[in-house]
Image 1: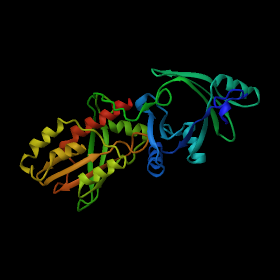
Image 2 (image 1 turned 90 degrees about the horizontal axis):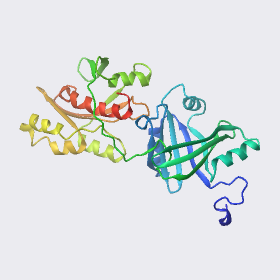
Image 3 (image 1 turned 60 degrees about the vertical axis):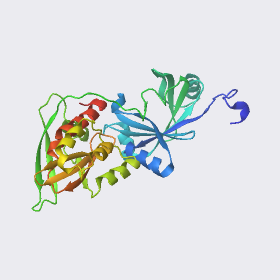
Image 4 (image 1 turned 120 degrees about the horizontal axis):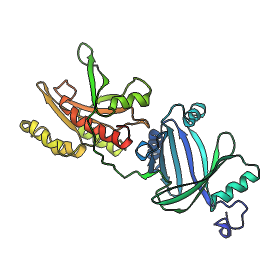
Length: 329
């Protein structure tokens, strides 16, 4: 497009440029990690359970003027999931930015294009966007995006990724039994929901995983401070812990202040517990996939063979904060 036609003037179907490419993928979180680490993109916006979107999760990646939207299904029966089953990860939408979405849609459909979505206005506190869509080859579509009256980060329903949401929680419960081999090397905690005021994290897992399965895996380390620091530097997100928790840790570890650096633990949001055999340090990631199902634990043991029973309350409250943010508590 030349300089004399930079705004599409004089074109029967004016296009201002490619607005974004939308990929439908099996796991938007992991796809985002790949494009950020391998290709140098930055994650700029997010839509999902925390923003009121219940059927999908989307992550906007940007680099210069290039924008990739990575979308994964939360419902295994959704068109997104069916598309991924049939095609694997791939581009679903080559979205075009246009000066007038309704005019573009009318012109295209009048000349033989198949309509996928009629012109629709969506809006939030940042303004409004007009969108329409037409079919192209295979199952690929062209969205027609008119964003002349919009000042938000991307589209209505998205929020900047740097935002954090602090929401109070109510009590939930679970019942847990632990199985282990004869020498205690392999341990399997088996959890089931117990009756509580709100939906427990086990209920949430069973709902989104559609049945029982592996919810979390514990990885042992000899230096949890170093391990967590490196994981954070690579983009791994961990559950938040209130500062007040570490006042209790300071009291419980008062005789080990030369060995346990409580300030360093607080800086990394690492939990600490002790029993008659020794102590342990542990931390839990946020879900590492799109559905609130799979997460990891990093643990360092100093004699203790337990599971951090003294940390259950702090852990539950941290998990419930995430549930509340997702609207699933």
